[in-house]
Structure formats: structure tokens, C-alpha cells
Length: 396
Image 1 (cartoon, rainbow, N blue to C red):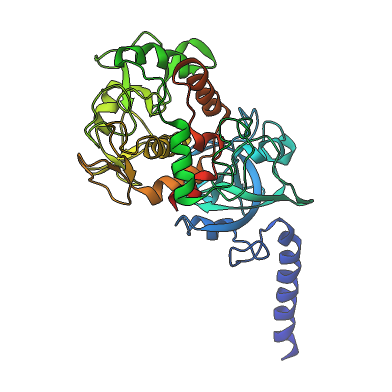
Image 2 (image 1 turned 30 degrees about the vertical axis):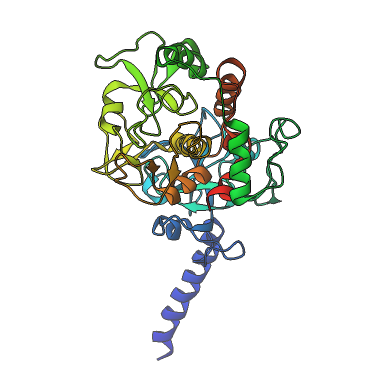
């Protein structure tokens, strides 16, 4: 009888010993998604419902596509991939974490290549990134050594409640500071109203300047495809770029008239055929991926832009809903939480646009575009680029 017990005891001891040796490279046990009890990466992969949760895992590289993660030669600081083990190589077992501008200097792999292999925690929205299981717009990130606060770069808090200082607060926005709700919306309308209007023909030259590719001053960047294209390859032919009304001009039936029809705060260069596919669709998540513009999805009643410009789109729509309030013979443009708005002066979905605003914070490129429109063309600004927190204050 004793002989039959000994092998069992010996096997149990060996199992415990092996487990104790490999335990340090394992991620936390299953948690509740809070900061003190974070999700494992595997939990986060199965919980992609848009809710805000904390996830802990090991940095294993930088995602560059839905199926590819690189482990050296990092091109930027925009994203990291984390996994439950530091040796994971299968992207299917990873979460792609978007690193917003506030955290890039501390958590971007180009700036911090030694971060690879370290365990981090991040709190953000569990939602697809690079068309892959992801965590977007972290509101808190931590290395093994402790919490690293966001950099004070004057950037966005992703649409949360923290006030973002602007150099225009004491002058341009002076009458809006301290207000909220309908009072804030009214104050902002009065500030950005009566801008210098362009003709529709003048929009071509304006977009060549506002949307210039920083890496190639001879080109513009196209909104939905991200393609860099010659500034003068515009027109109506296949692969030309044309003028996309992000707030569809049929939603309020304003066409290309001076004012809403030529307001370059919401006009962007886009590929002709991709623009045709978007048409006058409202904005929402889902649909089939566009064959010519990967990362963009659409169906019969909505368009979902690629992740990199979701926030840009939302902030352009917010601007239009505040700038055009029905005075001076202009349409009264408003947000609602529907699609299929047709020719009514509404755009949706408001709840999705607010989510995109949080998930894709304001970039330096977007701020520069706002500055160029203000100084060189319309002499008005998009307040939701300067003060991202005002989106929630006005539209929630």
C-alpha cells in the first residue's frame, strides 16, 4: 500500500515544483477588470464590448496589422501588443493597446524599446483596434514600477472631464469658459459663427494646404484611405481625389452653397470611388470592409471610418452641429442617435461619435489643420479640437 502511494506523492511534488517555476511568467489570474483585479489578456480578448476595463499583460511588440506584430525597429509610439506570457508570438493571443498621445513618451516602443517583456496594466475601452481585439484610449497605464501620469502636452484627454488649456482661452474662447450644456453650446456658436466663407472652387486650393502630407509637401492625405496623393490629382476620374462633405450635404439639403457647403472644417480630400461608397450614410459601427479602403466598414445605412480618423470625423460633426443653428438663413444641424436620416438636417449616431471621440484623441496633425483654417482661411476654429472635454459637456 505504501508503495502505491509514493509514486503519487512524488508526481504531485514534481507538478507543484514545475508550476512554481513557470508561475512568474504567467499573467494575473482571472480578474474582474478593475485596477486592483485586472483582466488577463485572454479575458480581454473575449470581452470586446466597448466597456472600460483594466487589463494586465506582457509587452510583446508593436502591432502593424491585424495579423502582424513586430519586435524591433518600431516605427512609432502609437501602439503596443500585450499577452499573457512574455514569450507569446501568436497575435491571436494578444491584445493591441492604443497608446494615446498623453502616454507615448512613456509607453511607446520607439521611445522605450526596453519596455518589451515588461508587464503593464492599462485601463481603456475594450474595442477592436487594427481590426483586432484591442484596448483603446487608455485613461491609466502602469509599469511594474508604478503609475506613470500623462504628459502635460496640451493634448486631449480623449473626451473626458479634465479641462484642456488652450492658448485661446483668454481671448477667442473667453465667453465660453466655465459654461456647460446649452449655455456652452450657445456661447460656442456665437464664437465660431459668421466665419469668412469660401467659394466651392476655392475649397480645392484650401484643402491642398490644410491636408498637406507632412512627409511630402507635394501631396495631400486622403481621409478614409490614408493614401498620400499628389495635390493636383483631383477631379472626378477613378483614383482622383475629390471633396468629401463629412456632414453629408444632403442632411439638411445645403448642397455646395457657401457656408455649410464650403466649410472646410468638415471638407476633406477623399478617393473618388470611396467617397461615392460613403455617399450620405450616417456614422455607426459595423458592416463589410471596403475593398479599396481597408479598415473602413459600411452597410446600407452607415459608414465606419478607419480607427486612425474616427475621432477626426466625430469632431468635425460636433463642429457642424454647433456652427449651424438655423440663424442667418442657414440650416439648423443637429445630432441624433439614429441612422437613415436622409435629407433631414440630422446626423447620427451621436453615442457612437462620442465613443469615437474618446477612442481616437486629437493629434498634432489635427491641431495644425485647425490652426491653418483659422489663420489662413475661415478665421474660426473647431472648439472640440482645442477643448475635447467640451464634446461631453455639450452633447451628453
